[in-house]
Image (cartoon, rainbow, N blue to C red; front, side, top):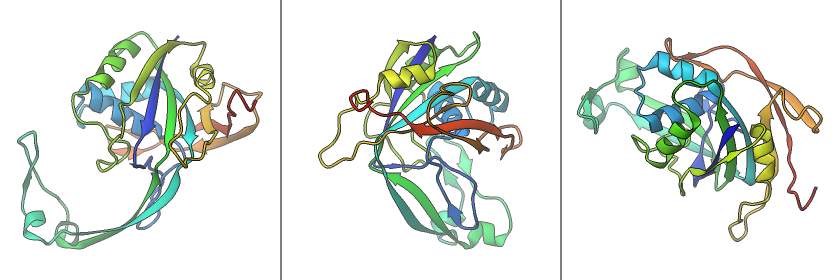
Length: 242
């Protein structure tokens, strides 16, 4: 099958997870909804293209491996929504006015958040699209090289430090493609190589690790996360160390 190899390399990345009070925590690995949004952004989908986003999400299969171990970082984040520049309607680059709805606190209060990030890590993601409809893997590869809009890794502040697209390969599955890339990412001075990974639950059943239940499937029509799926997490050592 055709598999895309992507390089997630950014000063900050945030993959999202279940929000607890004011803490916007981050998963160890990318969420399915994050990849859907990332690929949809590259393809030029709009946030309201719910059916197209749901269909894209249902086709994504991926495995991911940290090549450079990241550092956990928590940002104390406040936004004073009562400032004149925040209280009035804003104009986006697409020429459409944008404003907040809700009560007075939602519109004009001070929002406090603790936003969790991964800092200075490098990850390889091997992904494919199941089925034979558009967009194809080749179409997505072109979109990632010439995206319709700027891409980011979780939040708009998480800009990639390098192109996301690495190459397209033929492999039996996404895990095999990821294993073939093991140890081939060059390290920055002082960086510590990692090997922690996740992959689809039906692959690599003989590899040491654990099965984890996650809730990362977004209902794009109703803008909520729902559903449950399983993934495997473990260590995929470098070929040199295996």
